[in-house]
Length: 211
Ligand code: DLZ
Image (cartoon, rainbow, N blue to C red; front, side, top):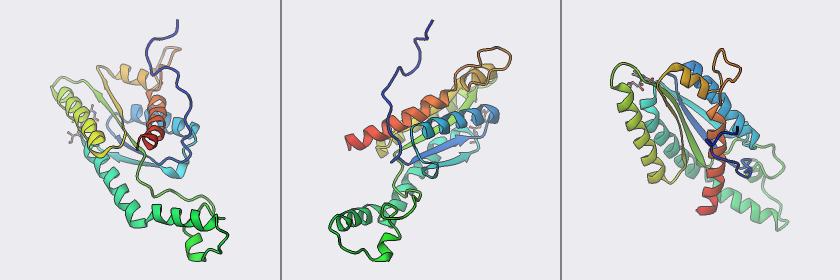
C-alpha cells in the first residue's frame, strides 16, 4: 500500500539558476553522510550546478542555526561587494544593443562567451542537516527545541528558505531507516535527504517569484 506520508507529488522545478547552501553537523556521521548524498543527488537531479552547491560542516546540531545565519549573511555581503546584479544587468543591456563589450566586462560575465562559473549571488535556500539521537539525559530535548526554533527564526528574519533537515530519532535504527541505509531488512528505508533537496529547489524557485 502506498504510504500516506511524505510531501506528495510536486511538479518538477528547474534548479539550474539556483545557489544552494548546505550546513551539516558531524555527529552520527554514517547517517549524516547518507543524508548529505541524498540531498546533493536531489539537487543535481533538479539541475542545480555542482559549483553552486556549497557545503559546510559544524561539530553538532546545536551549531546549525549560527552557521546557517552566518552562511547566508556572508553570501549577501559577497554578492553586494562583487556587484553581480549590476554587472549582469549592464552586460545584458549592452549585448542586446550590438555594442562591443570591453574584455574586462565580458571576462567577469559567464553568460557572454565564457564557460559557466560559480554564482556569487546570495543563497536561494539553505539546508540544515543534523541527526539527534535520544540518549539518557535531557540533551536531546534541549537541542531539538533550540535548533528548531533557531532555524525557523533565521528563515523568517532573513527571508531565505531554511530547509529543516534535522532528524530527531529515538534510536540509531530509526536514523538509519530515514537515511535509506537500514541494515538487515530488504527495505532500506527512505532517504529524507532527497525530500530536503527537492524542497530547497521548490522554495528557492518560488521565493524568486514571491520577491
Ligand atoms: C552533545 C551532543 C549529544 C549528546 N548528542 C548529539 C546528537 O545526537 N547529535 C548532534 O548533532 N549533536 C549532539 N551533541 C553535540 C551538540 O549538538 C553540540 O555540538 C555540543 O553541545 C557543542 O555545542
